[in-house]
Length: 187
Image (cartoon, rainbow, N blue to C red):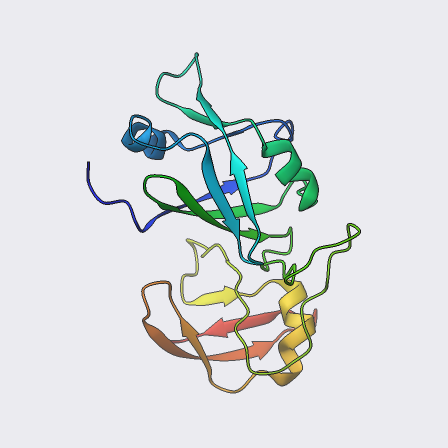
């Protein structure tokens, strides 16, 4: 089996995912015979979860997380529109980053307690991760999530340095629109 240490994929939370979540077919087809059951799912706040899985009967080889998934879903207050970025490390381990409906990664801190969701931390030297969808009609202009724009727009350097998941750095200019959304250009 080919090495899948860097196999990453997004899953968007849609209705009826509180009891189980289906892995993408392209991923499932590659790993279903060799993936441990249960798997360990580790979040960016350092917590680990043991989640068991089954193969979906209607779609042979399609992996579905079941046992332990609901507790994970409820603990992190996952809601419709949230997004998970899963990174698979064979044969038994996943890292997961959780993004809210604002497309900004949710910073749960080291200790999520009492169902409280902390806000993006105060300004300082750290990394904030989010994802955006590049529009086909204007690939040279990119609008950043509104929450990020409002929380960080006044303190961003000009130009801004963006780092891709592959480590490439790009220096880009930016403007703040009247609606407080940051628009990147160039680079």
